[in-house]
Length: 331
Image (spheres, rainbow, N blue to C red):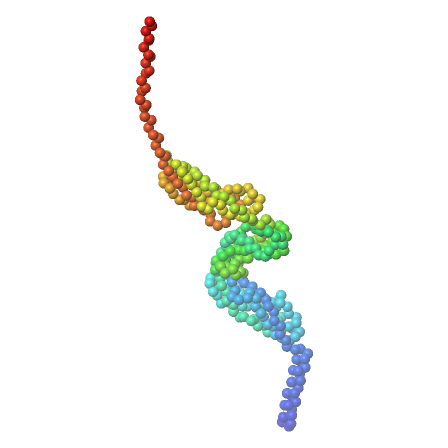
């Protein structure tokens, strides 16, 4: 009797199951939600820098019925890597997930990456100067920017290979629209030999104070050159004539400072051992706060002559003593 209309009964059962599943899917649909959480490192070795290959975050997908998925939150989910068994160099370590125990029965969790490549290197710290990099043009015309940072140097720390990539630390600032002196906090940037930022190192302090002062645009002045003769030739030689080439140089600097300079002297010239005509290259003495345009030395030509010996004095012949005339005889 059970076999009567068996096909119809099976068909009815299948329809009933499908209808039940359909109703369940409408009332309790299965959905997915993805969270991106930071990767946490456990048991980090002291004195070493740990670097992850790729992003320091991982995407985790949760799948389950809508009510269960919607009751979750990212702050209850952790992605962990235990470094207890890691060694210096490259390591491929498993990623473990930590979440409330209630999720296990209602949700299925899947991490985008199951294993993470981890690099462990000794830590290095270097003290490096901060170089100001200015760009743009200030609002005031004919000015230059004089920029200093406080502090003038910072500590760069990180993995040995990354710190060694750093060639300089820059404090960039755009002068566009600047109308006067200013002070501003700047975030220094570590860059490599190609000028690209090295983001994997830490800079301490993370901010420096940039003090910017606008000063008059340097002007140029032509100033004569004066050879500064020191020790003279040995006796019986003397300087007969000297000349300097070029006779004048161009000096650039602050206009008020240029007004104080009327001549550029050479370094002291010693002729103590010079007994013949000679040509010397002598550096110029650059006044403080000014700049010489072009070569910083001149050519000095010196002509030396020997003093003629004094002629010997000859004795003049003795003149005869005039004799008195004999007395005249009177008559």
